[in-house]
Image (cartoon, rainbow, N blue to C red; front, side, top):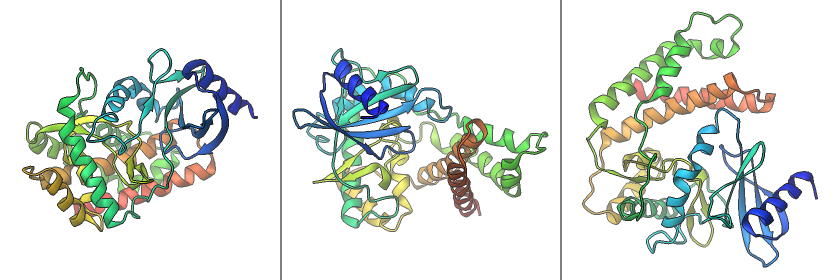
Length: 321
């Protein structure tokens, strides 16, 4: 067994009282350094997610673990969402994470199945996800404890950071700046438009509900039923913060109709859908740029980030034309 596997085995035993029998690599998503499927000695399967404590672009997710995991744990026990979302496992002393010198670990019950992907969801899966989100949005008010720190951040600081970067004078030998500079004026315009939209339609315009925050096709697992995973962005926000992701996809009518049936009486705000779409595209571009600025990815990861930046810029251009 490798040193990594030994470390995971020891951590599970010492912190969670889980005796591991087998450990296999698994997919962990954007925020994870690594992930593993663990089969315990009593046959129960667990999903272990590993975060780098010090990576700038994932520090945000690490800092939020203590905020969202107790809420997710409670949600997973409710009749409305049981079996539809991941179930967290706490340590023997009631914590939702375990730490080593460099990493942070979270543990869940393992859900077998495949993620359909952003563009691969069927109509049936799309309708099922819409119903799950409607249930989530109707359940948040029933959480029986305080949830400090989960309010949506509407400062849009990433817009200001992007504008500052694109406007800075010292661009000599800055390969990333040279890559994005042909789109600088457009990105600055988009950032200012997002800030303007926030000020005119966001505050007080729509009721606030508990949102997943990133409910796309890569964050669901198709097992016996569809399970919603990757809850690092759990927050209080308008429902449109969840709905915008599917509002423009090929099954958008299926999604919105299923949501309307599951949450009768709620009228979707299309202006907010536009706002959240633009906001997300700008944030994604800046996060990928930030990764290249602050971290040292290898050539493969650098190429991926540049491809995602290009794709994001193309999407933003479509939105502000």
